[in-house]
Image (cartoon, rainbow, N blue to C red; front, side):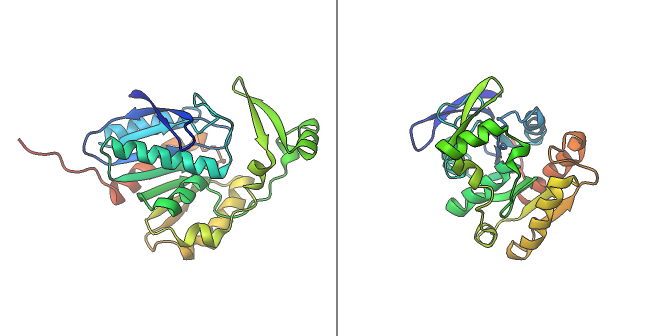
Length: 256
C-alpha cells in the first residue's frame, strides 16, 4: 500500500491509499457521509482482499474528510472528487475501473458514472438511489439545527475535526431524482442492502428503480444486517469480490 495525493478540480489536495497492481483493473472506493477512506476498517479489509486477488485499489478521503484538505463537501463536490480520483488512476495506467461505494458514497458512484461512464462494474452497499427524507433532529442537536436555519450552515465535530455542514449538504439527500440517477447507468451494478429501518427504506427505493438498470444488475438483502454491515463483513466481502471477478476480472498473467 502506498500513500498518495492528488488534486481535485479546485486544486484541493486529496489523500489516498493506493494498492497497486500493474496492468490489472482498479477498484475505486467511495466512502460515506461522515466517514473516511478507512470506513471504520471496512475499506481497508476489502482493499486487502481485492489486492490479493489481483486488483489495484484506491481508497481516498473526500474533501474536508480524513486527511484531505478543503471544506466538507456536498454531493456535487464529492462527485468531482471521485472523478478526480478516476483521472488520477488513469494517468497511472489503469484503464479498466470499477466502483465500490457505501451509503452516500454509493450515490456518488452513480453521480460520477453519469458524468464519465468510466466504470465497468459497480458494487453499492446501503445505497440511496432516490430521495430520502431523514429526521435530522435524530442526528444533530437543537442548537445546531437552529444555527443552520438562521445562517445556512452548522458546525459538527467528528473524529477530532470541525466540519461546516451547509443546508445544501442535507438537502442533497432528498433532492435525488431516481429515474435520472439510474436510467443512465449501463454497467452491471450489485446493490447490497440490510434489514434495519434505514435499510428497509433504502432497499424499497432500490426495488422501485431496478427496471431502469442494466439487465445484469441485481439487488440482494443480507438478512439481519444494519446499515453499517459491521456484523456481516464476511458476506459483504464475498459478494463484492464475486461481482468484480464476474464483471471486471483481472487480466491473465503473462507467460514467460
